[in-house]
Length: 114
Length: 113
Image 1 (cartoon, rainbow over the protein chains, first blue to last red):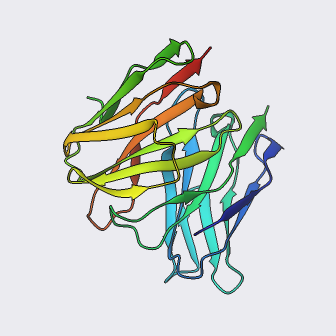
Image 2: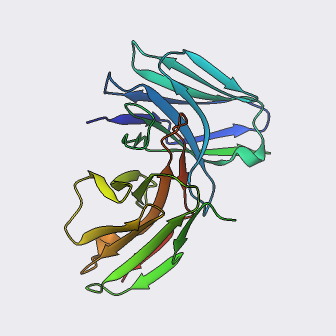
């Protein structure tokens, strides 16, 4: 089955700096890679996703890059703000329909300091 | 209007007891899931139902039994609770449309004493 590794487990940045979280996956057939943000006491929420037919996707301050050959993908957050503080999860699956199993990484606790 | 709602939010019980967690989604999605999040925040899939039919069943003890009376509801019953069952259990749903987004509930924190 799929195995997703995520680094770092904790990340502390100053407000306004950039943050980068990296993930690797094992299943070469995986083609869908979402990122979820989990705030304290809440369920995870999708912030951005990428499919294997593109190498990069951007949404305002958030961007995700994918290297299919190396089987790794990264989340980039620019101009970090205190409200970006949360746990971030990467994930991978074969397909994005309802019946596809999403495997999550181990999470990164991001802390944005004033 | 909550999209995926779980009850109860908190559950404290003794070892050996039986408990249930309920989940309902009003998004019209066909697929629902149960995920377990342990103390290290690791999210692991337990079960998935598509239109009331079990489609994913991970390596979970038989003490855990999901039930889906209709596609909007997915309940989780746990028998003979053990200390290691303490975790946050998340229900989620996912549509079959082009988006792959999982919609999570707010979680049910189970503490077994």
